[in-house]
Image 1: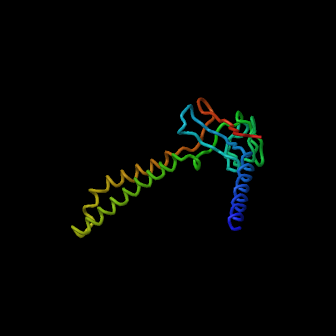
Image 2: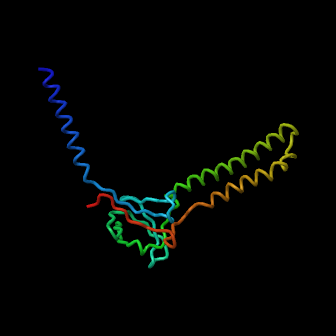
Image 3: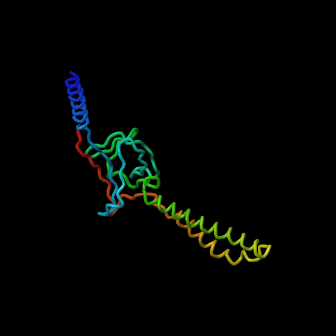
Length: 175
């Protein structure tokens, strides 16, 4: 008797999993793809529900909106409808993963400059009892800090829709 109930519950669980898998099969994936040339490393994806900041041919300032739907030739936003040809630039400072690397590199340079300068001050105070030797380490520490500051200003801020840069609307298994 126990074996029959075990088989029935197992059959019920497998049937339930099968129905769940069948019901999720109908969903598709839609996203906006920004790509520079044929380089796949510089691709950026904006999916439905993401924030999208852009400039158009009619307005020379950035507009931020939420992506509601993506169709074959238009982008439906919460307060606007766009065609990819109307977009002149997309703000990507918060989206591009290369900016995280540049940010970390800039903090590394600024931190190294600060630590080197602090080490020079401590060394001068310990050996000589005054700050007479800090000028020896000031040039290198200022150079490290300045290089880190310059790296922080080199972040990718916008994707211009011109030349090899293209904006594609991708619909996989759409309705």
